[in-house]
Length: 175
Image 1 (tube, one colour):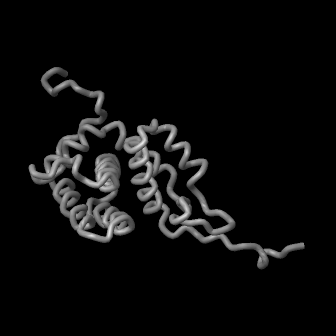
Image 2 (image 1 turned 90 degrees about the vertical axis):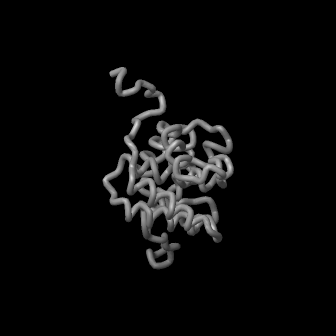
């Protein structure tokens, strides 16, 4: 019989909310690049990418250890359902010579995730900026984290009124 001390050890979750944010950026990237349906991508992550394995697979292996599934799902759905409004916020913050299409697709996904979470979460702006800068450092080694800081700081300190869904097109005077 094998004792507990002989079995491979699973790594404990260190930051489930950060893991959810990283996964949301990855999922949003996948949705944009492959044109996949959001619900399908969310299900793929839940079934195939989340959790710790006995072999200790990690981010480098395509696994997301112990993510906060509720937060992940909320971010992805919020970003997809409010994509147009979120992208307008991003465009309003970028210099006119820097169209949103020029941004790295991972950076676009990161902005979508961060802004979607900010719009619907009770997390202080400073905490979210810090978290998404950490996520940016995981993907980029250049000036991108500074850009993340600048864009999110500008947007979170001067938030615009939130349109709940892209499908909502009525103006305030039409209601």
